[in-house]
Length: 262
Image (tube, rainbow, N blue to C red; front, side):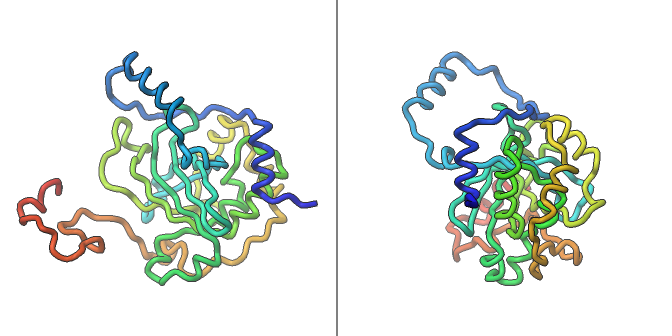
């Protein structure tokens, strides 16, 4: 009997797996946590529920680059919640330890839903076919059967990723504005040194993982995704006004509207 990815993941979660540590390379400024704060943290963790956090069921480690700048590459730890068979969401960190810094978010949708998006929206999304088939996207700690089942689910999906803390360059605080990120689509794009260091630290073998996934079926990328390959690059810019989020009259004076603009 072939088990579903969800059943396999639940089985693995119950069994527990050990993986290598991947600490954050960013040190946030600030005073040491006081005893009072520690007590508040402990009390809150005991008394308050965290359903959205507890719904996270998978950890995927891969690599992103800035849309329009393939030299800006970084590792990204995805902690994934499966909302339904067509939609997943992930919070992204720069490590897998308690002090990991929250880098951004990724929304992941099925090929079926991606095909329904308007052309301009599709430009914001990237494909996952190469990430899965190349072995660069890994699920550390999962046995091969569970990894294979999970990647069969991910391979033909599409992701929209925004990074809010650019930890490759901002080593103290999250500076600047969010950046749209993309995924790699062919061999030779991803810096092999990044992969080698990741494999060493987490105790994984990208080449072996690639071979084990050779039978996973990756369908052709749907037109409109990975728009950077056609030179269609989208990034946010600092502008005055609400843009697409403006809802008529703002109620603020011109001077007030300028507050916070750089």
